[in-house]
Image: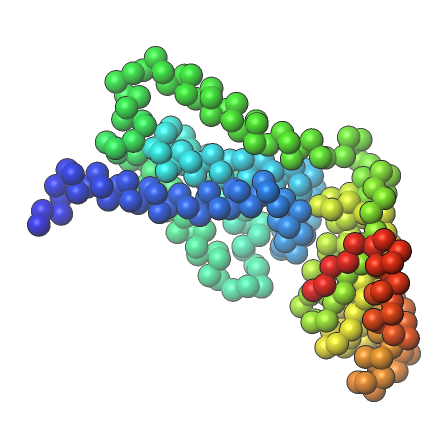
Amino acid sequence: MNLHAPKLRAATQVAFRGLFSLIFLTAGAKHLLAPDTIVGRLAEAPGAALVSGLASPRMLVVLSGAVLLLGGVALLTGTLTRWAAVALVAVLVPITLTVQVGAAGGMGPLFKNVALLGGLLHWAVEGAGPVSVDAWLASRPRLRLPVAGAVGVLALALALPALARQPLTPGVPAGRVGSTERVFFLVQQPPQLKAALAAGQQSLKGLGFPAREVEVLVCGPAITSLLAGDAMEARLVEAKQAGIRVVACGLTLAEKGIAPAALSPSVEVVENGLVEALQRQAEGFRSVEL
């Protein structure tokens, strides 16, 4: 078997492009269909402050989603492959630096992105190969510009609907001005408390899912994260200053033998967390259980 036969080489290039494009297709679709979820994760990233200082996190998520999705389609079909690879590198590098470098999830996601960058460099140099739209366009140079224009129009069509949901007044948090939503987080596990506080602050700033009021009810094992002197206390203080009401379930405190006075001053105590949750739902709060 000749591993360097032209037909076999072309087939492996098509397979490589197809399999390689899947991660960009799925990531781009998620950025566009569920941008609030990505914004919430971005709030927990090591470089979250830098990202927020550059532009609206939601706008960055939507724009990067459009590039990821179109770049994936371009790789899959072999259309403007070199340009698509360069565009994907331009998106992947800042994502890697702000989200993956220093992340608590380990080195796996970081080196996954490093491997993706290696693949993109391959396509940027080598091109798509003989079985591709690029090869078809090579003999039809007059069609290259219309195809590039069509890709640009498609990118705008993908991004504009999500961008249209941005606050219209620059610098004015939509959550404080126009939103009537109220959000209630029920947290039971310690790792989820950090995520709930970050998502709540984003909501009050008008980012992600804008809200005018946020409450976080803590029950179960997560209750120990509310103790004065715990590593989470600084985040609790910050959350209270942002306008988030953090509440501890009195039943859980009694079960664990924790006195309310032992909690951070930023935390309130209710007698029964279940009753509190039912009351908030009856008042129209959108509830999220973590």
